[in-house]
Image (tube, rainbow, N blue to C red):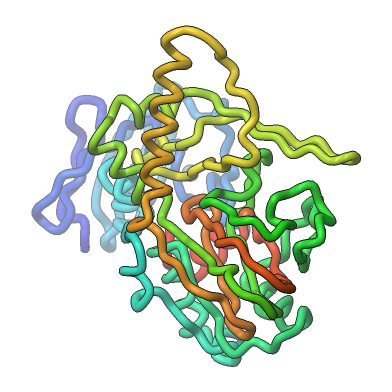
Length: 369
Ligand SMILES: [Fe+2]
Ligand SMILES: [Zn+2]
């Protein structure tokens, strides 16, 4: 890719890229994003200029292409250069393209597509680690196999991705059906599909689970792609989808020393690209909806039911048994999880990792922008 020509048309600089595409940039944007060493520090990758110091009447006096870069000489004698890659990345068209490259899935069709990485490769090979993260970006799930059946090894693989999030459950935790916490997860009854931490403003980005022990029957894991069900709803009933992106749904966690609460829509859409960013669906932690009467409430409940039907229909769910040795990682903003009821002793170890940390790991591997 190269800049063939640059010129001023009206109040914009128009560049022709590789002789086939025209991109336009307004004067103020170009001056604001000047990459000279007075405006931008290439050691810290941080902006140095202040918006208040950028003159409103900054006008390019000369616009040329030099050594494949756009060079602007301004009317106050400032000189700016821009690479073609930088200009291409920032044009509005490509900004929208920065949508996360996902593949939506339903039922167990994803079971032979997601990554199953051996523990030693996961810990030691950058390629294996990248494949693992690619699977999470694409499908929202990845597994690490051959992990020793103890908390130390579980913690080791968790921390390869990022630090464990500190919450009321601790950092790296293990739990069993002993009602140690005021949460249905600590019982033996079935758990319908849900996202964790809907009562946090920063719900865990990844959830990690390792079944360390199970001596009885049942206790199958179920996973489903929350974005797939929500996209189906967007197609079949766009009004219901829209309601769920606007109506505010509180969620709550109550225990003697804890009271977490957070309110936001059940479906959160990324305003930058229209992609679904987060599902906040949790039957257990959903607290009273703010509007108790009127058409709004009736419409809201109908919409929530429509989404719930997407998530409870059996063909959307992937059921399997987690055995010791296989550690499951999934995107808690996307993938809903649950389990069937069980008998006997069942011990799970795991942790949460913040969304910012796993996205950072994926960006370092050039999987996201
Ligand atoms: Fe959960
Ligand atoms: Zn500058």
